[in-house]
Amino acid sequence: MMGRFRVFYLFKLHLLLPAVFYFVVPGKFCRRRLKLFQTMQATANLPTIWNLSLRGSSSKVHIVNPRHRKSHALHCLRSEGHEEFDNSQKSLGQSSITKEAKHKDIWNLFREAQKNIMILNKQRLAAVDELEQLKKDKEELLERINQLEAESQIVIKKDKSSLFWELLLRIDSMVINGLVNIEEASSMRKLVKEHEANISVFPLDVLQQGDAEILAELRRFTNKGKRNGLHVIHICTEMAPLVSVGPLASYITGLSCALQEEGYMVEVILPKYSTLDLDEIEGLREIEADAYSYFDGQLHANRIWNGVVSGIGVTLIQPVYYSSMFSRDKVYGYQDDFDRFAYFSRASLDYIAKSGKQPDVLHIHNWQTAIVGPLFWDVFVNQGLEGTRILLTCQDFDKGLVPPEKLELCGLDPAELHRLDRLQDNTNPHFVNILKGGVVYSNKVVIMSSSHSSIPGLEPTLAIHKDKLFFAPFGMDNSMEKDLCCDLHVSAYTSIKNL
Image (cartoon, rainbow, N blue to C red; front, side, top):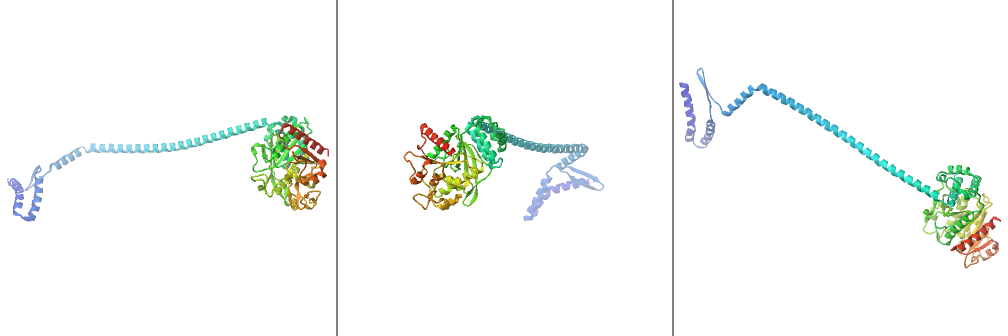
């Protein structure tokens, strides 16, 4: 009974306390207390559960919040299903472990796949590179095949004169390179000359090989078909279509072709000008050996080139030390023209002697190569050229006047030659006349002129050497003039041979 009353009292007190504080406790403190009790009231207004327990002489009142009750109930529920929850947690943990393992396996497979893709890409790139290289090799092979076919067609299309001269020029290369001596080379040249009519017997593919293979084939060459024409070498400064300034160029080519048709063996030696049209030369090749010549007190190296032009064997001489001599815009018209052509004339004779050639006639032209006459008789006649004779052709009447000491450049003695009966000029005694020297030192002289019967300024010399002279029409413009010119030169060569 007392317990119930106490509870009732406390309940009433709970309701009255806010009013008491509101009216009794004034001011700021009251407001604070009021706010506190309002909070308590808000809490008190919640549904409550009175839990009264009487244990002995005391009692306790528990105010239980429904949320707490709900949490309590949930806790109880969890407690009741604790085993199931643990089992589910275990299964969940195992599942997460399994998923993590699978995740790792997937990543490992992905990484391995990436590695394999990279390896395949590398292999693919290597295969592409190899394919490109194979394509490149194929293109090079096809290009080489086409080149060989073109070369074979060139060889097939070559006429007998071209093949004939390629063989002769390769003999020159053999001598300079030391493969054969001068005597054997001379025999081979005679053999090739005798075989010109049947030159097709010689295996053409051998011409594409080295000198040693050609030498072996020449030594097996049979003795068939002979020719008895003279061997003529032009030492000149022009030749059509390689280099052409005046009428000399077409004269050299036309006369050479006409003489070869008559059974003569004709070749040409030229300076290797930088302006030469090298596309006109068949089988152009450089002899792989330096040919030395004398000039200004020393021996100087020259590069020697061989080829065929219009069926005529051509040799080009290129100075090494004096390379600027023929690397100019023009052929003539320089203050050092005598030096240039004296060098070339001496180098031509040095080349002929070293290669073992024994031509019947050295045909020289105008003052530019007229110095060959004095050089031949004073220096070279005893170098295996005892049977060679000199023919001078005059188309240009420029005399080539130079001081006597200039003769020393190419190895001549000025004191011996600066004489009135030799090279001293008839009207300028302090100079030597190179063209006059050509007339004096040649076996025959052909004057090409339509309006002159002699060379102005050289009348006394020509009168002395009148037995040497041949007069020919100027130029070779038509077939009649060509025939007359050819007949005249045949007569000159024949008379030279009989000297």
